[in-house]
Image (tube, rainbow, N blue to C red):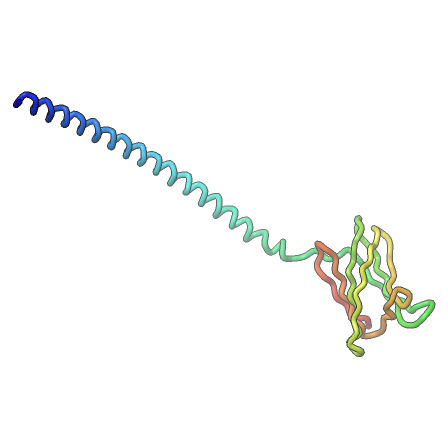
Length: 153
C-alpha cells in the first residue's frame, strides 16, 4: 500500500510538472504573440498617423473648388425684350449647367438646364424663357465645380 501511494504521488507529481511546463510554454507563446500584435498595432498606428497627416495637407486643396470653365457675356436681345446671357464653354468637355436666374425686384426666379459643348456658346434670353434685366442675379452650377454667382449690371 505504501508503494502504491508513492507511485501514485510520483505519477501525480509528473503530471503536475507536465501541466506546469505546458502552461509555461503556452504563456510564453501568448507573450510572444502579444508582442507581435503590439508591434503590428504600433505599425498600423504609425500608418494611420501618416495618412491623417496627408489628409490634413490635402483637405484645403479639396475644399478649394475648381471654377467652372465658362464665361458669361451679356447682349441686348435682337428680338423681344430684355438682355440675353451668353454662356461660353472654355473647357475641353461638355458642361451641363444648372442656371438659376432671379429678379429681386419682382421676387421671381427660374431654373434652366443647359448643355454647352467645348468651345461653343449657348444663349439664355426671352426666347428661352427669361428676359434678363439689369439687377438680375444669376447662379451657375455644374457638377464638380464651385457654384458661380453674378449680378447683371
